Length: 518
Image (cartoon, rainbow, N blue to C red; front, side, top):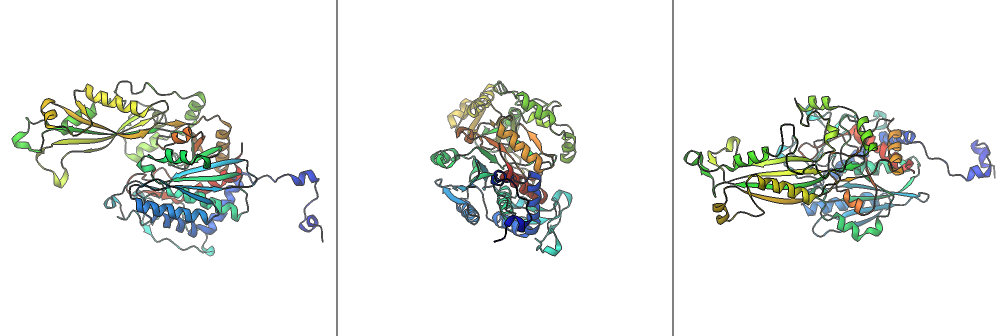
């Protein structure tokens, strides 16, 4: 038998060198290999995403959520990933998967969610949030709907980076799941071994508050051994550049209802006499913040854990694109007293996410309404307790002269109290933040920067909320590596995914799987 080294033209080297494991391709090379694979398989990848997006996924729609979970099981098992459904009574299960790499010394969990926000089909341009539509640009830029093209090798890459897929969960959060699996396919096709063992946790009720996630994971804690958890949730930086983040804000929801007469009254016969709850609620909400947007509720900022020096340095190095955002969003003067957006995201916030009282537009009626309702949310930062934050807000409402209750007022309460507010705590969770100077934190930043040509933005904490505190409680270090475009209409109509970000996300995830080491 001929000498294999001679046959392959390989120079002979000492046995000790032969026995050494070859170094993995550098992140930039892995990114190129994933890109080559993607360009030869775009139609299949987009078809897989489109099929996934076609399954309705509102968290409260349990039958369809179950279909989503079954679909995920099929896609994971088709790739040889050991898969388990962690059941939740009356809800969609947590989909858990595990893929062991024989020589890996570290284990990384990828977290994403497969449920989506509720939809109002009438508010969508195409009217069909679960029938994915492809456009050649963003709708705001005049993007036209085009058919999903068939790919042939002779045509080259059929999908332009600026094309967008419109569907609920196109960006939040189904596309990162498909990007991760496609990256895994690419590494296998290119014979690039995994540097880490891979586990996945795909949740089906994140948009409903993740109320069962912690209990479910604690019941199956034996499955969760890992050195790092990466969350794929959220968008990239508003500059369009890739993002690595180390914290997220917590969140609570609050319902406030202010009452007037027991029934709506004719505004001509009773106006100027019957108290108007819409006016009362407007005054109450207006008293909560000053002209610069600072919350005036007593103690609102007292429990904030200050940023450390490493985090302050990262903030200072972030892109300054506030002026671009003001132009894009049509904002003449932002809140915050001159502070940058990234600075304000490090503070707790108070937002009115909806108001309702009687009718407007063509349905407007000449009445004094019987009640006015507001839906509030407070975003929390590290150090703040959700229930304490609610109590601060409820105490402020009482201090404004309202009789605060948690139920519909009785007739006796109506007659006894001039101003009544029903204030209901709708649940929430605390913020979380991972130290940026951990070895694993530095390793993730290094890989992502190398895979993106040093283009990544590094952020101490994002403004959004994901229940990462659960993984804190489970003893898991977590870091955020989102991939979708920032202008994705997340949580609203016409949610979309820019394909260029999707492709780049595949490359980033491929580099993490192939090169992450610390």
